[in-house]
View 1 (cartoon, rainbow, N blue to C red):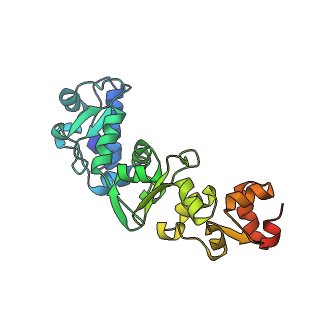
View 2 (cartoon, rainbow, N blue to C red):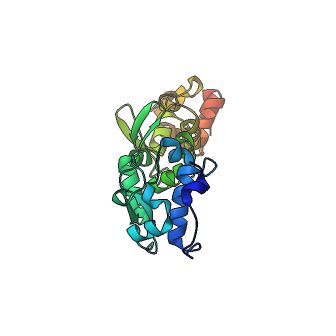
View 3 (cartoon, rainbow, N blue to C red):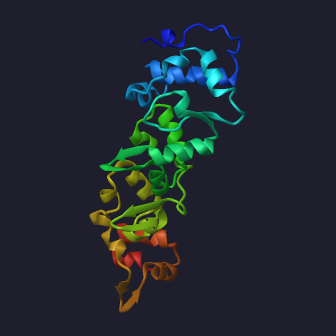
Length: 242
């Protein structure tokens, strides 16, 4: 069925209302392959019930769209119909989507809200990206503004730590960890490269003194990150000297 045929004729005089926009957007997602988000709706077999082919019937069943609400399917695996739809706030819709939508990424499958918690991203951001037609891989890539070292929790090997703790453990900067997580499987992203292993040492002994990297940094009068850079690039005698 073509998009124009599915929508039928317009005789209601509500073409510019938010209710009509929701009804029209529903058909766009389900029947227009060129529409943003079609891949996750019409492309997955999501359809509109025959009764709602006319806006008058949709309006009769759903009523006018309340301010601050959007059209939401209660069961994300089913199509648009009176029994499966409601007007919901963004918070309600995000919670519904997060619980029911399973996403597969890097060989792992878990609910949307679990991915959001693991990546330190708002679940509503992931939902919005998927509705716009982004692939799961792209939708789960945090932008620089969305990544916070304090809230970006990553689980690997049975351990859950924030981004800054993982960076400290594998001896690289937080920006390097971010770049790895965007482009590598998690087991590779959180594994130090050969040239970085010496930064993993909890203590370094030199000239009869044993100190942590942070203590050597204080001794040399540089920051811990600068000391790590020195240890990667310079001979140890030069790296640990003031």
